[in-house]
Amino acid sequence: MNLSSLEVYRFFEVQLNRKVITMTPFLGELIGTFILVLLGNGVVANVVLNKSKGNNAGWLTIAAGWGIALFVAVYAVAASSGAHLNPAVSIGLAAVGKFAWSDVPIYALGQMLGAMLGALVVWITYRQHFDATTDPDMQLAAFCTGPAIRNPFHNIVTEAVGTFMLVFGVMMIVSPQASLGALDALPVALLLFGIGLSLGGPTGFAVNPARDLGPRIMHAILPMTHKRDSDWGYAYVPVVGGIIGGLIAAVVYSVL
Image (tube, rainbow, N blue to C red; front, top):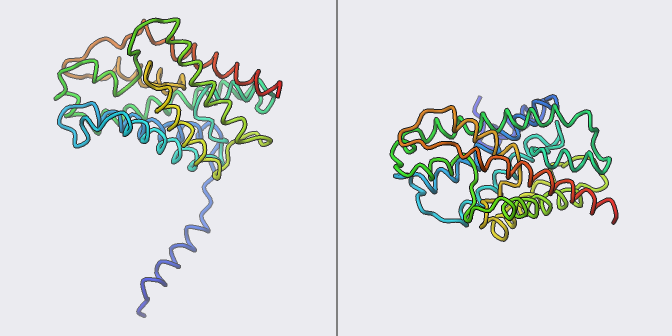
């Protein structure tokens, strides 16, 4: 029996539509954050590491890459976990009563593990380029953020402002639902893209404690030629700034 290409396509389309993939919220957050960091840190590695095809492609490429990473991640796991992918989002939603506080720890654990696994796969993918990069700061940049001008107070303020914009935007987009849906993926991705372009210059717009801390831990663990320390003196800044920004977003949303 000879089948046309259209008939073959329709056959596989039907089979895929029949397959329903179910994940626990924990697994959804782990996989979603894995995708986010794999594609997000992947674009940073492509731009900053030596001898990569995308070397020196610039800030616009990084901001766009993170936006696309968030779009794919949210679209992939929205149905299973609500696609928080960020402890600041989980805490902010819990603070306004749109998410159970009891679920925050398991979500944060999934987000941290997903971020660490994403960073590991980026390292595996760019292994030769990490070793070919003699600037240890560029190696670190492919894992986590750092300030353009180091001032802990101002760096925390910058991260808080960026995270506030992200979490407040998410709250407005998902209202009155309690989680992101697949159709919300595009506006949230554009929001992160805009944050990167507008507010990312001072600190590199972590705007997500797990996205920064998880890969930073992997940087400390993984072997690299020319490796520096993991800048633990700065590690608290994206965490503290992110949580503050998420909570302020919750307060503002609550009074509207």
